Image (cartoon, rainbow, N blue to C red; front, side, top):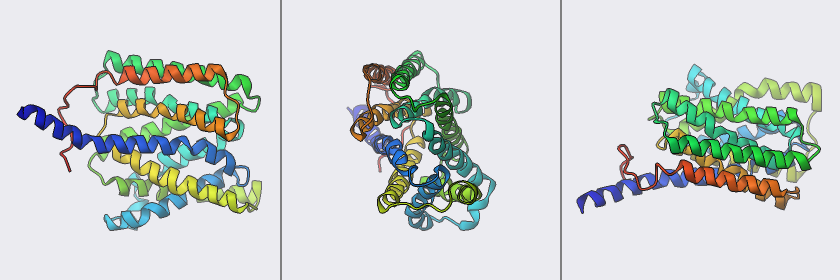
Length: 311
């Protein structure tokens, strides 16, 4: 009886981290829709910068309360986080979406589980099990099927756009694995502030160059500014914070598998946004779900050696 009570308390302790992960996935699934709407009024780099800066404004008061010092935002560690998780990740995603539909972009984001699985095994000493490996491979197969279904019906989706967007998850994997290995006990709010605040600072020259030489100053509508604010405050601010909280306590391989629900939600949202969804994409989403369930088999009903204490 005492063992079951103890296990129950530990499970309650881990549940908030899974809740943060699920909330993050739901929020991130809306990113391609918000981005697709915003880049029509802003340059892609400018729109990405607006997202990062507004997200930073949301997190800043909480980070200051937790002890954030502005001088620490220009350290090598903070710059690495900002470069990987914002400058490269967000810029690649936003820029590539000029030649990639919202639903295909959502799907491509779920290529991350395999890289998260490899990173967890190589650098975090996580155990590679048959079910985790099979789940990642199955889910990735679903991504390929769904992506193929999207490109066949969307002539505006190009190979260049696919390659650029597909690179973005790799930079996020580097950030997640590095953060979990080097700063496992760091305050997630402060880490999130580094990502968006330092990232926005590093990307100012890119934004200035785009405005000066490519797009000119944006003549955006009020709705476009609202979209940029949503993509920043909610998608980056809330989403990145929830991810950083979740990945601090949940295996990288498992967070990667959960991330695969993003394309499913994204495809549904893209349908309501007005994009055509093919039957092949529906089949691919079913395969993705199967991969997630297979990959989680090791985690279901299995006691954990290390779980956070109940709060």
